[in-house]
Length: 488
Image 1: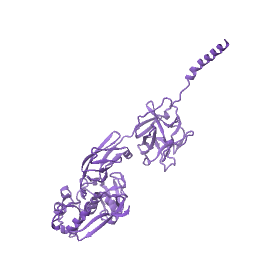
Image 2: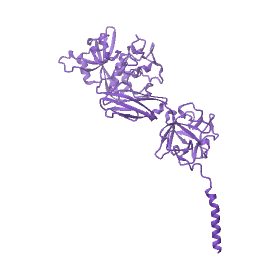
Image 3: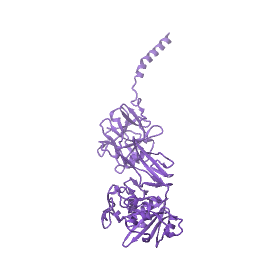
Image 4: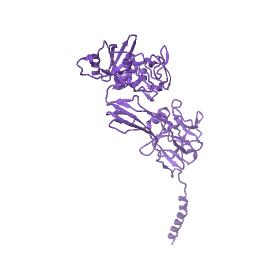
């Protein structure tokens, strides 16, 4: 009987304690779940507590590149690239400093600061969890969340730390995608040759959104895209290349030709001359005279390209070859190094200039006084330097023989009294003619102000022949390019 009484007493005590145990408070993170709704992309994080935006110091100012909050000013440090890991956690890359640093917790101790590192570690993994209308950002596998209000500051900016999650507004963030303000696609030239590698260039604002672009071709038998916008031209034809970033899509047609000498650049036409000269209206060169690089149409020497036939001719042949200038930056395509040839890029290589970072400014040295040594030093093809050969006392037979080994085109210098001009001879129309004196040629003439004057026309139809009165007898030298033995 006593044993039964004791057993009943124990049961009664357990019954009284059970509600107390079940009513014990749960961890604030117990109901948090990974949102799973944020795809790879660039976002801003705004504190629910005070409306300020997550930002970060540059590493050059602070060794740790610490995170802080401040009023939004739409700068790169406020834009966070979220990349989803295989386990559902995220890496967070502030887009300042070229986005090369990832956020990580300073330590696992108390009140660790949020800082940046070029090396991704376990302390760089974060869980993003939905909490009502906002998100909590927790260090993966812990209950420590990005928080403001710790009292830690640097340069009077409140630093972000990781604190045990309580569900307070100081630990909640509104996460919003960064809006794209502009997005366009370009190619350097109008056409590319079959079996070559070229690129479609995307200009997007913010610029780092370029890394989020996905590329596609509607005809992969003509153009096969890579993930960075570069492509292989596989066969002659036209393909539509489409680029998508966020909810924005842009398309451009790419024309592939089966012709080793196909590029036409007009030295006079800035906007309809086969290249993007119209974007160079603010570019000046100084070399004894201070002039714009190009002004649309012929301007009687007011711009450098009015007499830039040599540079334009070199640009055509270099582009036909697929040669690249490794030491320059081209703001028109936001491209650093490995630049495709057009008259502006050739002018940079000709003068050893890197190029302007923006659309206006002044460069130095004469851009159109052709320096073949400098050009072949600065352009490379298949990782090798180029050499040049200049031959004098030319004839139709010599030009035809040069074309046999240089199908990309032969640059021809012509002299007519005190005036001179350069053109590119691309091919021989009648290579089987019994008499070499009967050879006729297709040319690309930079002096043309419409296509019928210079874009793949016979020499007799070119502006050089019809308007400038050059003849075959005016041709006094040719220039060809070859691969050097030296690696670049």
